[in-house]
Amino acid sequence: MSFTSFYRRLNNLCGSRYPSTQPLLTSVEFDRLFSPHILTLPVAVADRAEKAIKAHYKLISDTSYQKHCLQENSWLGSLPARPDSVLTGYDFHTTPTGEAYLVEVNTNSSSFMLTYLLNEAHDLPLSWKGTSALESLWETFITESQLESGSSVAAAIVDEQITQQKMYLEFLIYKDWMNSRGWQTDLADAESLQYAGGMLRDMHGRKIDFVYNRLTDFYLSDPRWTALKKAYLERAVSLSPHPWAYLLGADKLRLAELSQPDFLESYLKSDQSLSDLKSVLIPTHELRSLGSPEEVWAKRKSLFFKPRQSHGSKSVYRGSSVSKKVFERLLEEDIVVQEYVPAQAWPLSPEMQHMENWKFDLRFFVYKDQIQLAVARSYQGQVTNFSSPYGGLTAVIFE
Image (cartoon, rainbow, N blue to C red; front, side, top):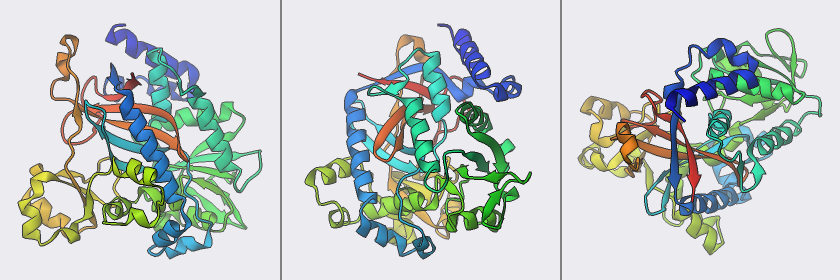
């Protein structure tokens, strides 16, 4: 299939399946959002990742571990500890020999529905180990929505300035998909939500039972989301992803703790689980724990700097590229530092010469400890950027 035919098929699938997206389709840069290539990786990569994900879920489900995490966010103690949320993402770097290294965990990972469309355009399997990816996802939404509400669900997909978000196209897809399943779903700006009389309502006064939360203020700290946070704390609405899941699994301080000597041994008693999780960990530290500024600067080229609560590669710096001015600013911020494990380069073939100097990372979409779908993200530069032709979301098969 030619690139032109591939992108035309994607466009047609999106517009016919999800009518709300049609006004956007002429403006979306499909050749930067989707790669026309298919990446083949060793089965060992998926196996290592899957074992590590199961071990990690075992960790974040441990009650003593949950109590440890709660120490710094005691306001969540009024709610039951809960590690589950829809669309958790585990991002890995890989090696040609089948290793996988955990870069980070996300509790509001994007691109599941876009990945499903991508695989469909390639005529690739739409399942994981025989389980339909879309049906599995729907079951997770049902499970999350029924935690606090009945079977008749009025849902809202919520973000900040939602029509301006890069993934607005996918929000519209989710809206149409949920409505096709019998929900009453609309998009809403988080700032416009209202809470009174034990009910969360949108700007039109519509009562909301379930919020698919795409805010990247993971602890709902901004006063603009007071209505949503209060409804969540008073259990007046089902919210997913939610702060508890972020606290337990996705706050980057957790990765720094996992690198501390004997930390994991305090919670994971199974030698196999310990081995499975440790095998994918990249040594991660709080910046302030690495020594004096002069010592950190001297070894910066082997490091990667990340804000503790960053998302989407914002303010992420490879040490070899960081300037002295930026470094001095990072010293004043809440930063974690990972040892630099490079993303794997694209395996070149004659028809892929335009992919020279490209690399990719690998995302698994997960609920609890079950993988639902996987996608690679190919890019040039330091971090995933969706800015170069024929890069972006890339279909992946394991064999």
